[in-house]
Image: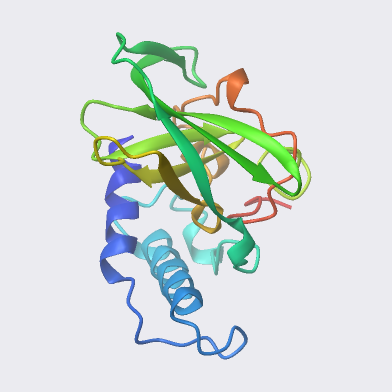
Length: 201
């Protein structure tokens, strides 16, 4: 989704270590997360690429997030996949879009062994990780959430997945968008109380 990339790119660009969040203490990681979240709120309120409708924007104050927690910054075992032909990923409007399975990440989360397939779209400079977990439909969006991760260097055997950076698809805010549906293989059996919460109560 081009619009998703524009907003995420803007958020990353303004993230800096110079702002501190008193509630989290003097830790640069927490400061970075908070700065990125505040920037995303500003983009949603007034950015040209905001997924919110004109009717939604005047009432919008902030997206809802779990408090950052470093235990959800996971160093996973990484196994690259043979460069197969792109697969057709289902979209919410019944179309499909081509994504290439790029690698698999295996890790433990809340004491449970988990695995995710990491995808790459031709135009993307990062890996795309659509997933569902046990929190969906409760505290988080029922259709699943997304995570972006850097493409590992050739020969890498590990990858960092920062679930504090998890975000909702645009469909969570506006039904007019078409969004990738997380594949069944990317279901996490453990809840992931990290990143963005449900937009609607």
